[in-house]
View 1 (tube, protein in one colour):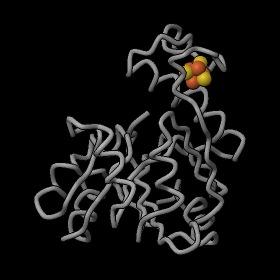
View 2 (spheres, helix red, strand yellow; view 1 turned 120 degrees about the vertical axis):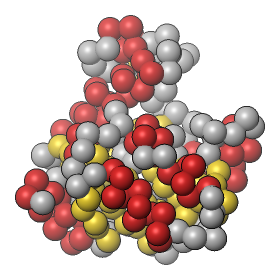
View 3 (spheres, rainbow, N blue to C red; view 1 turned 30 degrees about the horizontal axis):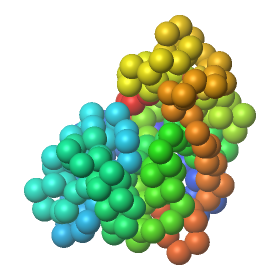
View 4 (spheres, rainbow, N blue to C red; view 1 turned 180 degrees about the vertical axis):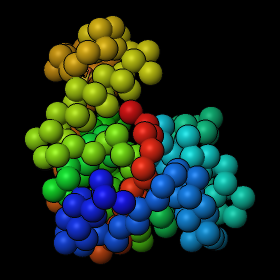
Amino acid sequence: MMKFDTVKKNLEARGYAVRVFSTGKEAADYLDANLDGKSVGFGGSVTLDALGLYERLGTHNKVMWHWKWEDKNAARREATTADVYLTSVNGLAETGELVNIDGAGNRVAATLFGHEKVYFVIGRNKLAPTYDEAVWRARNIASPQNARRLGKKTPCAVKGDRCYDCKSPERICRGLVTLWGPMMGMEAEVLLIDEDLGM
Ligand code: SF4
């Protein structure tokens, strides 16, 4: 798929395994076929939810997701030690950097340590030409949309146009992690999907 050719090459050069899918359904089929009998932690992600992965993988894996469990903190804690972790990103640079912003920190922490393998499930709308533009996207598109989705009392959620670097107590952007490559000792695979998915 031409639009992913450059980013795929650059991700592979950084040490990621990369697969390209035409649809989210195909990516979900792939994960469903490859994960069995594992404990699987989920990061907060509209993409993962849209793909129905919690429900599908849950029929033959132990799945932990604070979006689905009543005890959200227990789910966050258990997910951090899962065999496998699934998440998306807030921005993907064509040069191969992965950018995520987080509030509680469980999601970004899980991309750094604690699993056999982490999968990044990424729709085409997350792709930005450069690292700076991927960070810009994470801050000014993904985060305001997430704040709005969560009904936060922040200027970005009210106006919906950009980040105001707010000092609101409800600020959801508490830390930003850039991955230059897979962390040592943890496999990482990037699934690129030719559909708009997530925020
Ligand atoms: S820092 Fe504040 S204004 Fe900026 S995106 Fe996050 S919550 Fe919104």
